[in-house]
Length: 347
Ligand SMILES: Nc1ncnc2c1ncn2[C@@H]1O[C@H](COP(=O)(O)OP(=O)(O)OP(=O)(O)O)[C@@H](O)[C@H]1O
Ligand SMILES: O=P(O)(O)O[C@H]1[C@H](OP(=O)(O)O)[C@@H](OP(=O)(O)O)[C@@H](O)[C@@H](O)[C@@H]1OP(=O)(O)O
Ligand SMILES: [Mg+2]
Ligand SMILES: [Mg+2]
Image (cartoon, rainbow, N blue to C red):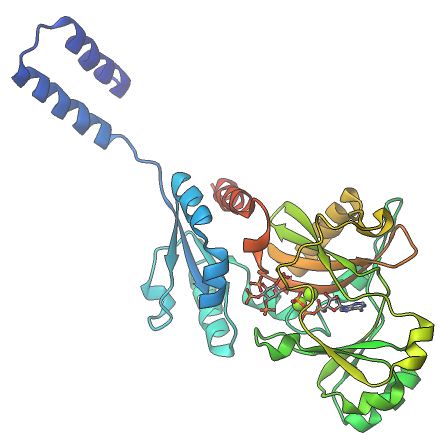
């Protein structure tokens, strides 16, 4: 007799027999034991190694609750114990900096090819250096009927601050320039940017850094969040345009705070439609698909700006690994669907 037949037999029996209390208990026990012997759906165990700040912003109750209802369990990784002594895990989520952690994780990844590590440490390193971060966008040279996507001209400065002005002149770069720390290492310092308005003040900058030409973009930027195949775009306030006349009046280096990281969303702001209209979806889809593949990453975001006065000239100015997904509307659905899809593809 099949299991189904056995269960329906018991249920039918319960309906037709005249049962006393004892019989009823027996039937219930028998029924429970059959149900518990049925194969239980396998839980998806996701280990995570994140900073406290990230854990708080990412692992919100709405994500954990939805995940639990879909059979996904998040388990914190203990960094004081070797990774291979923990688990078993199906998926490993991580964003921690430092060579020791990277090597530890790479070693674990080699020994446990069955565990999906999001994402491979070497691929993450590539976007933690602003010299290599945008190389793949530049190489892609995306241009089609929906628009063009490029990167601002940029120059890496490693040496003496006194020679920056000469290096900029030789490279033929135009002011103003955005100065960004070369390495993104999770520190506040790596997000301390400045705008240099004149060539004399360039010597005040603190290498190693990347100098990027400032692109006027109407004070709005688009954060394009990628989670596997899913794309979610949000609008944020950014630096205002700088015009030539104003440039004559301003000199020096202006250090600016993390404008785009602030919670202030530009979603409902009353803006010029030419500025606030999202980049065309098909263009973003092509870009995301290519970059996922070229960067070998599934969890990242891009900061994209539209060159002021154009409809379809876009620049990628920044790529971040495992960004602040907690700020993205509906992220709990996007993320849990993504985790489940990883397992479906695997089996
Ligand atoms: N080339 C550029 N032209 C115009 N504005 C720029 C340019 N580069 C950066 N900005 C402005 O400076 C802000 C910060 O730059 P960027 O995103 O590169 O820094 P970040 O520290 O990596 O930021 P995040 O917090 O997103 O990681 C941008 O959001 C944008 O407002
Ligand atoms: O501040 P949030 O948590 O929202 O996330 C930010 C994230 O910080 P966190 O990883 O410590 O959380 C940053 O990472 P690091 O470069 O400092 O490693 C960077 O990715 C930002 O771009 C994220 O902001 P978003 O681009 O999503 O607005
Ligand atoms: Mg940015
Ligand atoms: Mg960044």
